[in-house]
Length: 567
Image 1 (cartoon, one colour):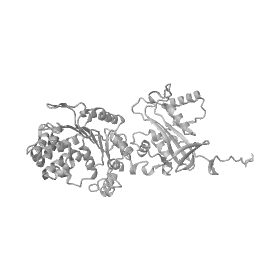
Image 2 (tube, helix red, strand yellow):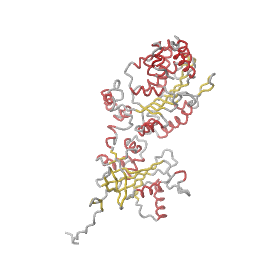
Image 3 (cartoon, helix red, strand yellow):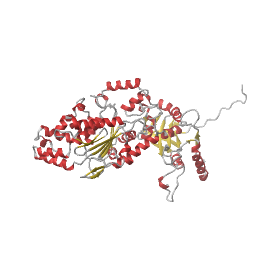
């Protein structure tokens, strides 16, 4: 419920201030938390986040901003605001209202006001204590807050310690450094009975230590999705989880949200229909003032100083700057490949008269096609990569074009077909997809990584060829080598094409693009880019001649006779 400007113009200045503070954490902060909000002009993106925080939405909220861009301060302001506008305060404002419309508004707000049960999860114990200390300080010592909302008295309740506070009105904030502490928690009340969390703020809950291993990252995700989310009330407005942070690993929860945002950011409808509400911004914003996200507080010159400091003082160098400020776990000056290396193509594949073509802007060019397969045959192992298949094309100039691909985690070697021809449980096997893509794109040959664990794939492929009497499927086994790591082999195969500007991706190949940009020791998965690397092994360009407006195979020329006598 909101009042029009014409109605509010009839209210007093104080009433308008209290009204705006009720609807906005920023308006509340400017009036009651001036120590934080007077430091700089409030940036545009804060208003967008603040509006969402004060909406009635129950959709999980994900916020990823650079370090030093006041995301935690914004959360604190909204939390203090929520605790200040108690039912007692709202009814008092209604009784003192100077106009009927404002009285009706405050009564409406008081009617929908419930006892609050919030949790704030930080990345460490010290951060957890600091969060509670900030809230407690303003509820007990801020003179403006005490005058308007505490009626001159401290709002301190019976429980009041470093990690858990309860106000006189019964509103509770529980803070922790561990998501597991949220599981199954409820608050006992007389009026409402047992209540679940209204809001959980997971603020930088991921760090370098708890995302170090695959198991630890999976445990964090399971806890958040399977324990924390179900602990939140869903029957009332504004009840939701808010996940805030910067990525600290290529497979972290925050990074996964960023990947989704990057995938849908150019499609507002898809982004709006996604199960999370996402706000993601890097420090560098070329189309904004000064080319940065927050020009009045973190101008380009300041970011350059911070970048230089990371380069000189940190053992991780520029990688840490890009992680903390550009939301890229490994990128920029330290990445194997950056977005500057990526090229994209738009066109179609055609096959005609036994010749493969790609058609770009109406122009046909002959190509040879190849397929690479990176099997992950340990399908029951949660830590395994996905099985990935990649089809590429090479033209006469040795440019490589990504054509098609398929990747899935739980692929068997061979799928089980039902009577109607469909696969049981919709699970085609590696061999099924390999043959399908091989035939669809008339590949010259395929390459499969050949290690002990993938021998069963070769056995199943041999059985398929024997059963179907196929002799046209040529498959290479690529040994892993003994002296270099997999990522070094990927790099040595693909880098010459990236360096020469000869590698072309599809613009919607988000997973491949992500693995390319994350290529390095900290990347989470390398299955898709590994299948690309395998597809690029032992490839060669087509040899055709353009005659009379069409491509033809070169005419064979008789070999020159040579003397059998060698000198």
